[in-house]
Image (spheres, rainbow, N blue to C red):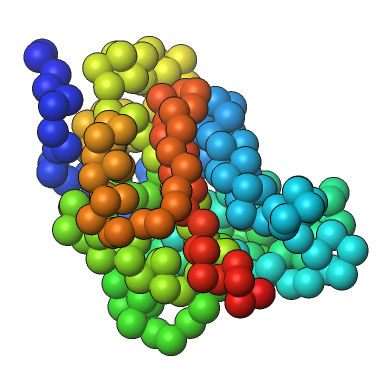
Length: 250
């Protein structure tokens, strides 16, 4: 089968069905989290967050004052990223208030069950476009392996809103659309014994991922004054957008 990565695919993923539930979904969520952690994906998001939390003295914000930092994780899945950040905050003596949002009720229920020992993590089952209409403000908004689920026009709408709703900025960690990544993932499917849904959705996700030019184009259309865009292993882009205005208002 010939793979074309010149433009983003608009093929649907099974996981995009917000009514999906059951053991197959649970297994897919947990396998995605395991692979992401194994390949260093959580670290990519954490490194981006650390860039936003550093003050002018290059120290983590409120390391001594214990100022509460509110972090929203969009498309949180089984909550693995939030638990990873909660463990990091405890280690660094930081005060994180962590919120996960996902439109699938089964996914949110599963995430809550896995996070019962974390008092600083809460979850919200809601459509992100409806949630964006609410007058809410967070310090940081995270998108880990989430942005590729949306079409280009939707991405611009979301990112513009995220910028307005975050005082420190946004961290995007998402897939590099690449033939090499596509073929390597087929090997991971075998090695990790992924179910058919996980395999099919994973391959579509890569084809719905991004090239550097895509993210640079979004940045121009959003009129971003400042951003950091880096390629990271394994076939990821880290897109960090500091909210310049928010830094002066802190």
